[in-house]
Image (cartoon, rainbow, N blue to C red; front, side):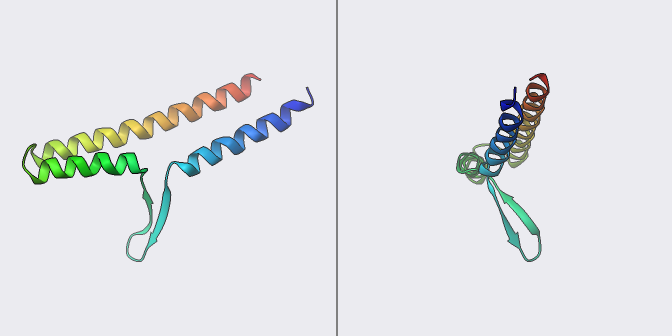
Amino acid sequence: MADTPRRSASQREAVAHIRDAEGFAVELPVFGKVTVPRPEQLAYYGGLALLAAFEIIDWPVAVAVAAGHLLASNHRSEVLEQLGEALEEAE
């Protein structure tokens, strides 16, 4: 049982490390702190931009798909964080 506080602290550190690995932030003069997505997400958004630029899909469709992808990835992170907190409390 003496192992539990150490384990929960390491779990919190692991969650923080994973959250930091999701991307990084860049400080821009006009916009302030801007988070840069992971390379896979950048490729996804770039592909959507190319499809819209070559008029394979309409730009409103590309914007809607990108917004849906962004919302889904944010929701997934929140759900996983809540699940991790619930598991920590259950110990």
